[in-house]
Each structure stands twice: as structure tokens, then as C-alpha cells.
Length: 265
Image (cartoon, rainbow, N blue to C red; front, side):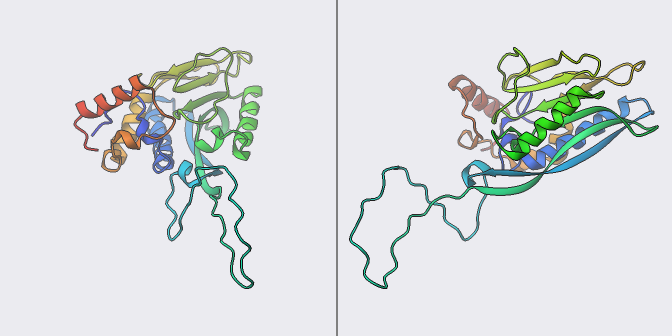
């Protein structure tokens, strides 16, 4: 069964399923791209280890045999009488920041002869959109090396949340695809994608003399969604939409898409 949305499914942005979708979508991109390439090219699926940090609420994790207490008031606790000797004083419980290991997947289009990297395709994850995080800084460093090198660079960002680096005067958008061609150092092509927009078909540049390949992101998304049967797992309940919060109009549109598709919450 297909997703009820014409483009990116916002319910897949939940931290409870994102890592699974990230890997599935990367694999689907390779399955869609591979038959379109001349035989002199090969598509590698790679990954790097990342650490995502945040509260249990932000990361959407369940911690067994533990309770998380959130204090709504920031006022200091009133001083009470000193505890009797030998009596344990009552503590204040606080929420710890968690560090969860994960993997980030990416694609590399290489020329078979010499194993030369031609085009890098990066799929952003929450870890490298978290402001100030070590993994974000590592990713931005790798991005800079791509932009300064002889490799074509494609970045696919299907996450509304987090901090996105801005490429010039691009308009704000829910999602974004960016292409930087190795032979156009000071320019990039950007596809701003709204919540209600279908995912675009983008060009994948190759070596000089070979025509670029049209990569249909919508088809790759369909392959990933249907192949993994995400409709079995996702609960299309407006109360469970992952952050950031939607505007009133967008939330109403999401509810209507779910209702029209007959999806149970």
C-alpha cells in the first residue's frame, strides 16, 4: 500500500522509525539508479557511524525500568528543615541527555575502472542537523571537501526539523535537495520541496562526455515505502505527528490526506 501523501510522508520523520527509513530509502535509491547508469559505473551503498544526542522525548526512545521526571517550574525548591542525622535527604530528579549510536547511509557513484568517485549522494539524518553536535561538524567538513574537490555532490534532506545549512538566497522549505556540480564551483542547484509537493526527479551528473541521469526520487520513495510496508507500523494519528509542529492549514491538510486514504489511526 502506498503512502497517503504525494511526496515525503511526515510520519516517517519520527525518531522511532527514521533510522529504518533512512537505510531503506538509500537502498531504494540504489535500486532505482543502478539500471539507469552505463555499465562503466557502479553504485556503492556506504555508511558511517553517528551519535545522536538529546532527551528521551526528542529521541523518541523508551527506557525500560526507568522513570523520567520533568519539572515544569524552574523556581528553586524551598529549603526545608535539615534532615535528621542518618536520614537520606530527598533528591531532585533530572532528565539526562542520551547518546544513541546509529548509522548514516550514503551513496557513491564510482567509475568501475580505477574505482574513481564521481558523484556522492548524501541523505541527511537528525544527528548531522543537530546544532553544535560533533556529527554535524564532521558532516559539514565532509561537505566542504566535496564542494572544493572534483566530485559532484547531491544532498537530500527529507527532515523538517534540525538546522539546515543555507545555500545562498534559497527560499525556506520543508525539505530540500541540493546539487553541486564539480565544474561549477561557485554555484549550486536547489529544489525546495514543500510538505504538499511530490518529490522531484533530479539529474545525476557523471563524467564529461556521459549524459546526466534523471533520478526519480518519487519512485525511490515508493519502492522504499511499499517494500518495507511502512503502513503496517505507522499510526496515522495527528497527535503522533513528529516535530516540528505544523501550521493550522498544513495540519488540516494532513488530516484530510489521512482521512481520504482511509488510514486508521
